Amino acid sequence: MAPDFIIIGAMKCGTTSLYRYLGAHPEIGLSREKETDFFLAKQNFAQGLDWYRAQFTSGARIHGEASPNYTKHSEFPGVPERIFSTAPGVKLIYIVRDPIDRFLSQYHHHAIAGEANQDPAQVLNSQAGRNYLECSRYFKQLSRYLEFFERDRIFIACFDELRDRPQALLRQVFDFLEVDSAITVDGLDRIHNQRSSLQGLPQWYFNARRSPVLRAIKARIPRPLYDAMLNQLRRRSQVELPRLDEGLRAELKDLLQDDATQFRDLAGMPFNNWSL
Image (tube, rainbow, N blue to C red):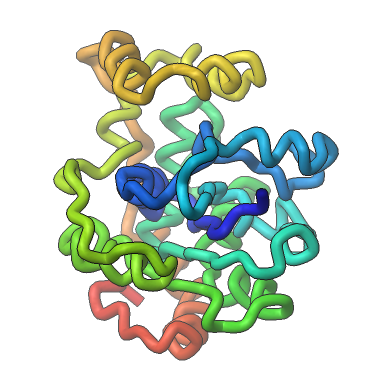
């Protein structure tokens, strides 16, 4: 059983929410854990196809997963080739947001998790900052997939639509996946994995969740129970985030403008709410 679709990113663009919403459709089955990271050579590809197939529950008409690391080519090269060689008929979903907001959201995400120690003024001079930039270069990331997949195999979604008009966007995604688009999904008023929901979690949680043991346990715990456990862990005090000035935004605009222009042409979408 190969996946029928994969949400390939981008990180901090609503992939968790989209994954959860799709999982509420009765014809769609998802991987037990959102991010299998199977197609990463440094992660799980060596586990083999039997391991990958075992990540999916049976019984649904189509199956899919969501791994935003699949559009981090500078960190994890070779992913489109591996996906194509394994599942050449797969459909891909790429959800994006304002490239500058996405960069800053990833920086804050890593700061909350204790993984970003750079001063905001120096973040662009760090390897981490360069990786954040690459994730916001949507044209560059998607161009690698277009070397293997036809454009009509890729659905480009906008985070703003998912947040503001989720049911309308889901109908388009359901049509793309060829499942019943008349299905109404509940719980669309909640955006998952938001910064505000992460800031109150203790530091040890972010270290522990990278553990293969915890990932295996998490995959077997019903989602409502896992969410309830996280709520118990949250503290009233929240991690203070680095202050970001307009100078950084201006520099990011210069660095990302050309890619954003090319991506608009590729997607055929205006992205009118973007800042560049």
